[in-house]
Length: 260
Ligand SMILES: Nc1ncnc2c1ncn2[C@@H]1O[C@H](COP(=O)(O)OP(=O)(O)OP(=O)(O)O)[C@@H](O)[C@H]1O
Image 1 (cartoon, rainbow, N blue to C red):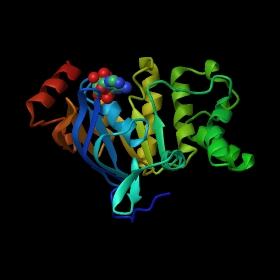
Image 2 (cartoon, helix red, strand yellow; image 1 turned 135 degrees about the horizontal axis):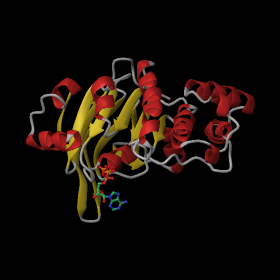
Image 3 (cartoon, helix red, strand yellow; image 1 turned 90 degrees about the vertical axis):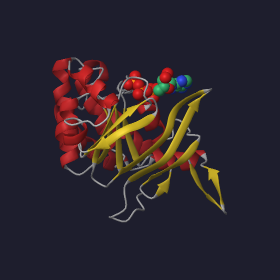
């Protein structure tokens, strides 16, 4: 679905604002993510990270500003010399190019791992079952679950369920993957397996925006880190700068708390 040329960013946001009632949660976010880049969003609870991801994926509507994914406008489309809100079909089409992995795994409990991964391609994309099944098996193999395809979510550990959720998002062949604290609901010993899958995706060239508290992942895998606080980007740059030599007092305070 991408309509960008190779040298255009995969994702861009300018001056994005979002309020819930009288509370302004996003106060003018700018961001740019090149094709194949991994960007990590860090910041204290309530700083607006999830809301920003949810706006990218049309789960929330932002109030002001502009966002583009793969050369397509998020939320609106040109209509003469004005902008018009997307209709349901257009939202579904935009969403199908964006994979999203949440903190909870949100798998269908009454469907096997294989059926969960096939669901999107078969139901949304109307792909032939045989084609969708082959891709689902390949993806479950890629996330280390080739021998678990027939298991139901209740028969899988949290880490395995999260890897099924990643395979399910990849089954739609997205241009951009969004991760919202994908390891924060996991027992510590299961975190590494999920991060390893994400590292592999990054190595394979997937464009990713990752909200995480895993500083090791951000340090080693991210091309750029954005530190958000109070609905603004306080600072951004390569992890070697933002994490090792933060310029802003708010970033320093957050990092010293997380590292304590
Ligand atoms: N649907 C909603 N209605 C009202 N307020 C909301 C809604 N969603 C989020 N908020 C508020 O917006 C603010 C930002 O929340 P958000 O979840 O985006 O932050 P976050 O940085 O992702 O935090 P966390 O790390 O805890 O997930 C919070 O104060 C939250 O209570």
